[in-house]
Structures are given as C-alpha cells and as structure tokens.
Length: 361
Image (cartoon, rainbow, N blue to C red; front, side, top):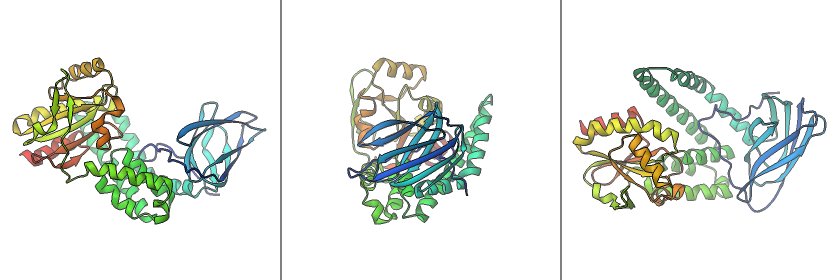
C-alpha cells in the first residue's frame, strides 16, 4: 500500500483548519498503531467556530474517534506530546502505523489527505533545498546570508508556482480550496488568488468554506494591485493624527509590523537600508504597528532605529487599517506610487531594493 504521508513542513505554508457547516454527518477515524499499548490519544479539531480537543482511551493498540463533520478539515493527533496533522472528512478513515513514527502512518479513506500527499511529493526536492539553505544562515557573514536570502526567496516563489499549478489542475479537490485559503492567509494577493478561486468547481464554491473564502477575497480586493489606496488616519508616537494622504507624491512603503513579531524585527534592517538609500529620491516608509502596548511599540522603534512615520491605534490584531486591507499575517507591506496606486506587495530584502532601483534610478 502506498504510504500516505502526514502533512509537515514540506508544504509551502502552515495549514489552517477551515470552518464547518451547521449540519452534521458522521466521521469515524479508526486507528491501529503499534506500541500504543493503551495510551491516550488526543485529537484537536475545529467545531462550531471553536477549537476542541478530544481525549480517547486506546485499547491495546487501537482507538476510535467519532465526530460530526460535513467538510474535510485538518486535525492534530497527539500521543504523549508526539504526533502530526492530517485531513479527515465525513466517512470512515483508517490510520495504521507505529506510534512514535509519523513517517510510518498510512491514512486511507480521505481523498483530501491523498491530494495533500500528492502535493507534498511535488514539493519534496524544493523543501530539501530550502532546509539546506536555512542551515547556511547559522554563522554566515552578512554577504553570505544576503545571497542565501535571494536563493530562499527564489525557492519560495517556485513552491508558490507548484501550489498554484496544483490548484488549477485539481478544480474539484477540496484541498485546492484549502490551499487558496492558506495562501490568502499568508500574504498572497487578490490578483493572484481570485482567478484560482474562480477556476474551482461550483460545488466547492458553494460550501461554507468556499463562501467564507469568497468573503475573504472581497476584503483582499481593497488592497489589490492597481487599486487606489483609500486614505486612512492613525496616530503617531506622540498621539498626533496622521493621514496617509499627506504622503501623496512619493513612493510609499506601508509596512505592517509589531514589536513582538520576530520576522518583522528581522526585516526592519532591510527596510532601513532601503529607506536610507532612497529617502532623497522620492521614497519613504509609513509603519503601521499591530502592537497594543505603547511602551513596547516605542521601544522597538528606538531599538531598530526606524526614523520614518510610525502609526498605530494600539488595538493589536484588531488594528483598523490592517483589518480594512485584509492583513492577516505580518510582516506585510504595500508599495504605493506617487498617485496613490498599489503597485507591489510584500517586497522584502533584496526584492524591495531592486524594485526601488527600477523605479527611482
């Protein structure tokens, strides 16, 4: 029997659970894992808008979990803090393998998991290369890490292309719907995702998850490439109101970040480098922070030596500007041209510098 690998870091982005409909169908997961020997099995899943964890007592090496699901979703299986994630769906799913070796797990009865497995195989070589490059970051010089970053960005783009091709070629797969949902949650834009959504089978679009994804895309439409960025106002570190329209006439990077966001802080030196290189050529940055504590926000600005305008309403993830533009992950950014039009999104590292060279040199 062909092994059905669990979902892991081989995939492009972390997987998120999709919502369930109110109606119920029976879902049964039957597990037989060598070495289980009566240990408890914990299953984490989403139901009625909330995360739940069920604890099942195994009998010898067997356990059975039942739930009321009407759509496939990602669940977490944990045994003594060891486990992994995979898709289940209405019907009877079987799991076999060895307790402490998720690579040995074989899952049958879940077409969505089968499709996730197929995509995982397609991404294996790229992911292996990505892991090697990440290892090279440790102890490398600034020049070496900069070169590695360029290569890593290239691999991410290749993986995105593989995912998009999978979605386009599997219009009836629920996993394709999941992939679009995932990518829109991790900074993919409306212009790229809307055609993929439109290519899905109508039956998928009419599911509860499909309808919610359509709503999400409508929100992303507000920050799509080519759209005029609506004016907004938030307060700076002194409490003074600042309108985005006051920066019209320049190229502006609207940078969404927070003091508690490690990847944001790691990216700040790259933004600072671009700012210093192009600030006298018609470019500036406007930071929009998703902090909720003024002291932490201001300290991070000082520590990272960011001289540009910094704005926030100190509402954390409920920041009104980020909500209006559909920002669900940080770091995220929008590059605005002098007329106020969005011309690029999520430019980081060398990509930001290269784009500004193209525009301003």
